Amino acid sequence: MRLDAALKRHAVTKAGEEALLFQGRRLSWGDLNEGVNRVANALLNLGARHGDRVMLLMNNSVEFILVYYGLARIGCISAPVMPTLTAADIEYIAETLAAKMIIADGPSTELAVSISGKVASVTAVIGVGEHALPLDLVALAKEAGPEDPDIDVDTHDPLTIKFTSGTTGVPKGCVRSHYNFVMASISIQVETPVLDSDIGLIAQPFAAGMAVMLLAVYVFKGVRMIVLPAFDAGQYLSAIETERVTHAAAMDWMARRFSAHPSFATTDLSSLRILHGINQLGSLIPIYAQGTFKAGITAGYASSEAGGLVTFKTPADFARVAADPTFSGGHSSGRACRLHQVQCLDDNLRPVPHGEVGELAIKGPTVFTGYWKAPEETAKTLKDGWLLTGDLAEIDADGYMYLRGRKRDMIRTGGLNVYPAEIEPRLLLYPGISEIAVIGIPDREWGERVVACATASGAIDEAAFMAYCRENLAPHKRPKALYLFERFPMTASGKVKKADLVEIVQSLAATS
Image 1 (tube, rainbow, N blue to C red):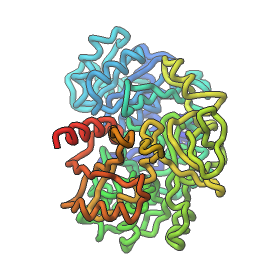
Image 2: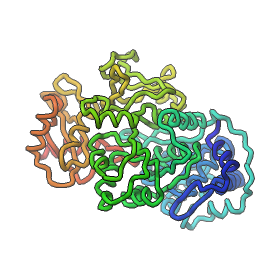
Image 3: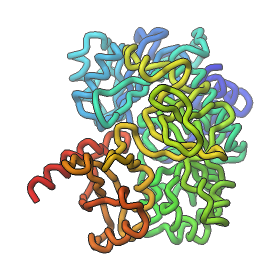
Image 4: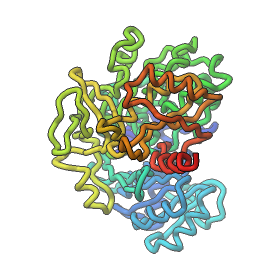
């Protein structure tokens, strides 16, 4: 049960069928498998060996896929890193990994060379695309043999290390095995199956996590894939229409952007069968109103440590919301999938009753094996086979799970707990609000004061916004102030840095 096993099979059973389209470049399953073999053999020729860590500083490309699967084929451990991270973070990750090699595309090659001079373990820096390095991946692969390298790789061997960009502290490396990835693909097939006839679209960066999971699912099933170099609303819509995409994913922020694009209303979206990832009902309003859109929506809870999706909100759940707006499960993250156990625990790690908030805990075959070279952090996070996520949630009597925010983000005001994730979806429904983040700032009288931070598509009347909050939120949950931003401080993986927002708002409050 190896990540690359399905690819080998497709190279036999449908070698000539198209597997991948990237910027006009088309590869069959046979081409893809041979390319993986050539990259694997090229890296072996350079000294890569089973268990070595190889950092990838690469944007979306065919070469990323060849490298990712090539490393898996020879038992090396890939470590994709967002090139947008700071140089200090990337150097820290390389040092922590004791990386054997760095593979970087054009924009990141100078940084890779600089890091290689500081991290003693690095023996080679390989360039992709336009670069001035002596080692070029495409040339090396062309010179290497097309045969399978035939390296013994166990199903429980580490496959990849995903460093969480995080919102506090230094990056931590989540180690996931071949088994974790294959079981995550199987879990999706059990809950919301990808069909043989599907055509998949990937627009998120491979290094961020979600996209590489989609890649694994599509390769596992053997469906044709359309990969974009990066998310662009116009290109995303065009790809769906031109290539007749049937299966795609989009986070809420992506949905808001493509639904606001000038070509959205006239794009033919009728081919879409499944659109995954949108969970805020407000983001779906313009999509449902688009005349050609008929797809089912799916969503769920996922994290790097959980190893992908562990709860699923199905098309039937979304359809039920449309038929019955009072259906509370519409605001949930779905129900636990068949391969996982999901519970909410108190501070003593005991399950809380239905409807009460506790820390979300997960057990299942996709859960990561631990943090790289961080046994103490691993021990805090993995207890008796359970992953303690650090997320607060509640589960109702029907099994629907509702996120209430990060444990560290919970606001304590006047002796009451306030959960930002409960408030934010409601505030997003206010006209003109593009993004929302609810935070707590210190308050002498109440302990913490609830504050709303927002980006907006136009002018927002604060008095009208506050009146909306009074109508829709309990008194202790209502923001006491609204701060408008041009943009939020974000991590490389697209998470709002709430700790930075707290500092900014405190500074603004002190000078007002």
